[in-house]
Image (tube, rainbow, N blue to C red; front, side, top):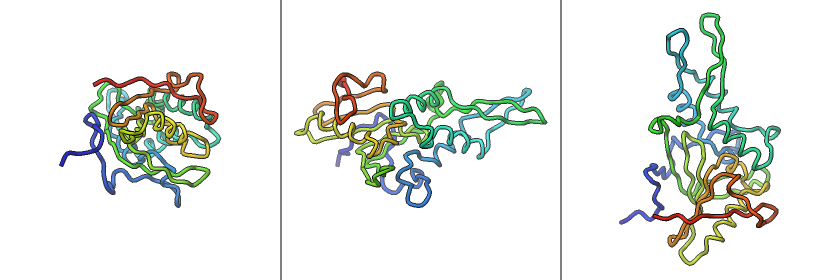
Length: 228
């Protein structure tokens, strides 16, 4: 029987209770955390090395957790949806630094969250019905499709029936971004896609998304058709 799920362009599907897709969190807050911590920590240690006086070294678990903490903004560090998204985008592009001491010599070295030069070194996952709990309301939303790079959710897709309009899917994604919904997922997201089996549209990052339309206090997203 053919797979009814959307094509993922080579990204592996993670269905069922995949242990690698488990999230970390305190108490009942695991669904509020949208990053796959275990995968990100493994990738930070696996992708990154530094050289000191001609010798190569790896980063340890403490370094990886420190870097991951810098990627995730605490409530006092957040600058609204667009500002926080921009800060995280900059961190994904530039990486972060940590200080290592070798033989009494301390220097700062860069850790990359994404290997932009060698894409094959990155780890890709796609999962359906990704559950996210609102940080203030406690309401749980199930996003149709979420795509991860190294455990970081960079893609959100909303799929509708052929009889339903893409505007309905657009409106749902916009609603998810409200402060009383699940905005923390969209702090990280760099690409949004809406589809209904007949057509699809994509919405790249914030500076390309907003125009003069409004929806519940949030500017509506201009969209561009996807062609096969």
